[in-house]
Image (cartoon, rainbow, N blue to C red):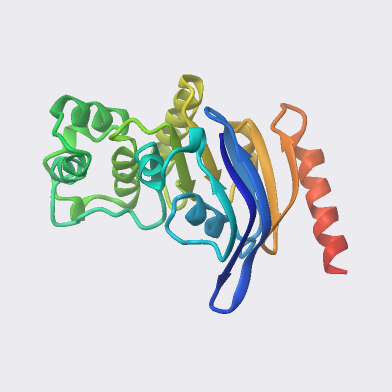
Length: 231
């Protein structure tokens, strides 16, 4: 289990995360819900070791080191981390080298997963936004991660790419891959996750299981809490 204990983060002299306590169990999918500026992306960056908190503790699963944790982690952020002058295949081969060896079958496998196998030899700069995002997801899945961080992966995608990504997440969930999903579409995030965490002004203000009938009461509660805190 990954655990954040009393995490505080300051960015540009602003306290963007306040006393965050969160447990993320192996195989668990979590929806991070909240308005812009709530601290969702900052929380993902802490989990992804992209930023270091000012105080608090990150407790990695089975007392792993930071280096070992990174090997279990896949990251999909608005920045795709792709080389646009290379082909899709060349991009994935480059990232695979970072993990120590080339496995052409695995590259083809993830390209088929994201429905890009037929254009794997085309330059990424010619791809649509949706295709680039799907390739970014392939990059994140290349090393068979146990945990995934997904920051607005549906943003700007066409309907076909959204459906492909949705089906991929459902399959990963069934296989036991854990992920934390940030999405403007809170109802869809609820559908794709086991648990929802509500954030407001850098704080976790509520949590709950993503049950079939629980979405609207949960969102109603969220709005009431925000209104109460703003008054």
